[in-house]
Amino acid sequence: MARWRDQTSAECQADFDDLLDQAIEIAAQQIVESWGLNPVAIVQPTIGTRHILGTVEEDNDQYALSPTPMRDRLVRDLRSSAHEIRSYAVVSNVQTGSAGLGHLEVILEHREYALQIVVPYDVPDPSTFNLGAMRAAVGPRLVWG
Image (cartoon, rainbow, N blue to C red; front, side, top):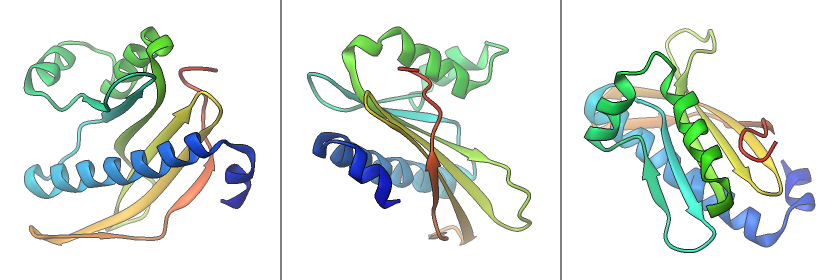
């Protein structure tokens, strides 16, 4: 994990730290409240305040009508406004083959670098969301590739 910090600016590092925290917080809230997670994008624009795509009810209705997976639609939307974005995170639930645990995938991308984080989680009861050890790797360049 230390290598990516050696290759990126302080801005990129701060964005990734903040976006990862927010992505996991949103995922935990949705999973505990509704026992599911539709992919969500958290966007840090070049100017202005951070915003979220994919959680507003009308957004979900719009996305539900399309045969394309929601994560791909979110990436397409991000790509179409790449000139206005500094960095983003997309969090989704993924299958990894480990029985009994769910896994979150967080794709973090800044104009400089991309990371893919996978973290197992367990929800033993409606008020508890436990995270396991995170695994990180160089991620796919989906917007600025």
